[in-house]
Amino acid sequence: MIAIASVTKTFDSGKGRRHLALADISLDIAAGEFVSILGPSGCGKSTLLYIVGGFIPPSTGAVLVKGARVSGPSPDRGPVFQEFALFPWKTVLGNVMYGLERQGVRRAQATARARELIAMVHLGGYESFYPKELSGGMKQRVAIARTLAYGPSILLMDEPFGSLDAHTRTRLQNDLLEIWERDRKTVMFVTHSVEEAVFLSDRIVMMSRSPGRVKDVIAIDLPRPRSRADLLLDRRFQDYVVNIERLMEEPAPEPRR
Ligand SMILES: Nc1ncnc2c1ncn2[C@@H]1O[C@H](COP(=O)(O)OP(=O)(O)OP(=O)(O)O)[C@@H](O)[C@H]1O
Ligand SMILES: [Mg+2]
Image 1 (cartoon, rainbow, N blue to C red):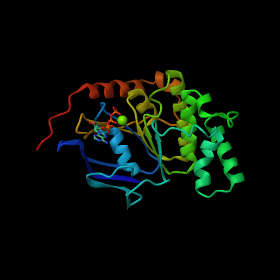
Image 2: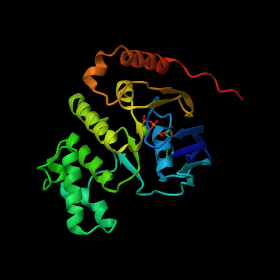
Image 3: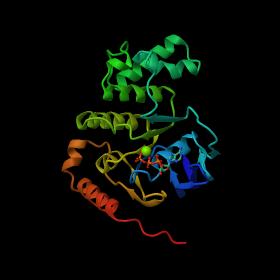
């Protein structure tokens, strides 16, 4: 589904200074796979997601989606980024319908579909609320519903639950998994939480400190559907979390030249 082929990214930081943010990233992601990306702050996780989303171009290398080279954003690759705020002047329903209407879906149909999605993220009853009347977790749910409305086959999620309290975060993780189990979208999910990554993912890509490289790819062989309560008691889950946390503490090996 997604082929990231020898992608590098160099940013021009002015006055002739250049910063190598991503060094030779190669990664293949299968259709329906849930892949998380873990790595220290500044290692290029967001940059990688923006490149896959087509929001910024790679300096060298390419990203192929379904065999076609990514050259810009597409509704088939839905971003859930914290900085992509909701429209404050639109209600919950209006925010979720926006994408459907832009795709030319008729109003009655768009309303029905948007209501379905709002129910799916457990916000039924809040259709006429404005973003400022919602909590952080509720806004994040609206953002997810709005992205799902486009019907993307790929979800690009950049720390979507990072700013939420632990309880809300757990609920949204469960909701996301439920949605994912239902229609098996391909997900790239950036997080700083090892537990969150293990709970959600089929594979975890560990990146090394700047310039970002793929340090390790770990398959998470835990049964699905997953329940957080069961997993917390599961020895295999605990082992994954502890081992990955240890790996993250290890300094990256010096790159060979
Ligand atoms: N537009 C830009 N111009 C210049 N440098 C940039 C730009 N965007 C990112 N960088 C640099 O690229 C590197 C990677 O940034 P990025 O935001 O991808 O890291 P990250 O892994 O997402 O970090 P965090 O975990 O803190 O979100 C950083 O050193 C950053 O300073
Ligand atoms: Mg980031």
